[in-house]
Length: 57
Image (cartoon, rainbow, N blue to C red; front, side, top):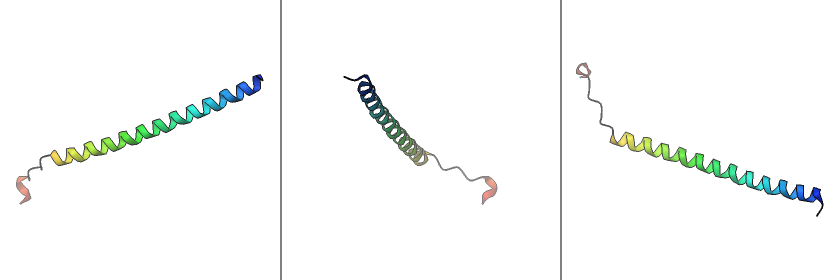
């Protein structure tokens, strides 16, 4: 096999793998963002309402 053809095939392979890694990273980041939003939502549900200050009436 021609060395240039081998090099081109290796470059194609690496480009595909790098693309897969980038997409996996983006999916992980989106999942992390969604999980953090869910945690914040649940924290708000479990927070006790702040007691009114004495002069607030």
